[in-house]
Image (cartoon, rainbow, N blue to C red; front, side, top):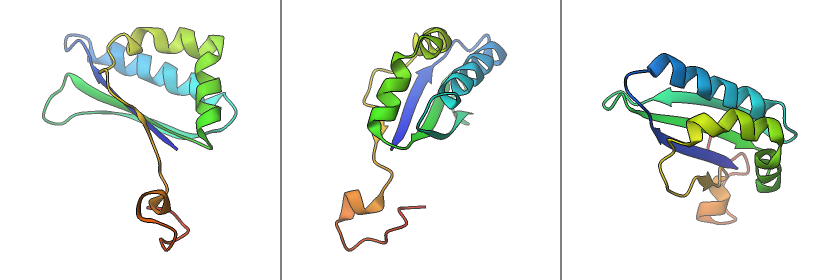
Length: 106
């Protein structure tokens, strides 16, 4: 599963916001079920950022959110999160049906 969280960050401190996202990724990476993750900044709107993580399953992600270390690491950046759904399927077959390629959409 994919988690795509968008942030509307303070534009006067991009370096500190990037560091906060790096700390969040490091905290997530220490949790069981974490596959990978990265942060990005929008090319057209420098205040808009994204944190994208991939997880083995939704349960692993939800359990990671409950971990104390993750709560501490995500508190500052998540205060700037855009309020919208963030959990997505990453399997093409989940979207188009059982005749889809088994390797997903990548």
